[in-house]
Image (cartoon, rainbow, N blue to C red; front, side, top):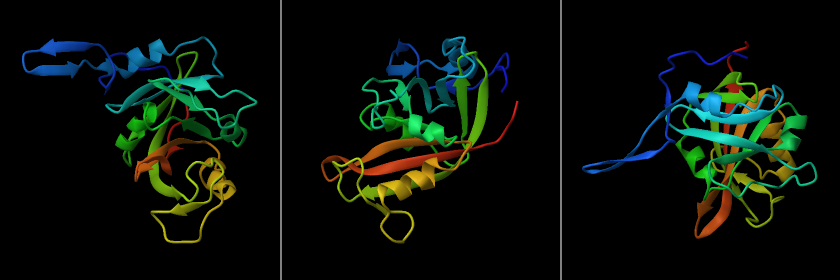
Length: 196
């Protein structure tokens, strides 16, 4: 892990709104500012996730007894405890809250996972997948892979594909379609690129 560099020019889309003559714009926060804001003094706990010009979100931990809990607050993602058991950083958010930002993630973007002591690890987005839930209201639905032709996948197979892979980050949110907020699932995977 590394300390953020001084003078880091990367910015995030969050910050105070300022008025201009022809509308509003969002001022930009640097990566270093975001990392400093996510400090909690605990080196083992993930407290933030940053993707330049896309998102800067606080990370909350999932309760041990509720594997389908997802925070109902803006500017927050929930870290999956079950994914963590497999060495994967699973970041969950509702598509009408912070998860809406996951749709702006793109292949090759850098993802910074921030720890409570202010250090961070870097990952690169390597895969984006879209799945249709065959029973949208059921968190344990079977799925159809919209990006790759193949057999129907059980919820267990989906979990193993995305969260069973070890040291990587997986963003997950629902896909809205046909008036159904949980019609499908978006999975964005980032693989580790550096060790500090």
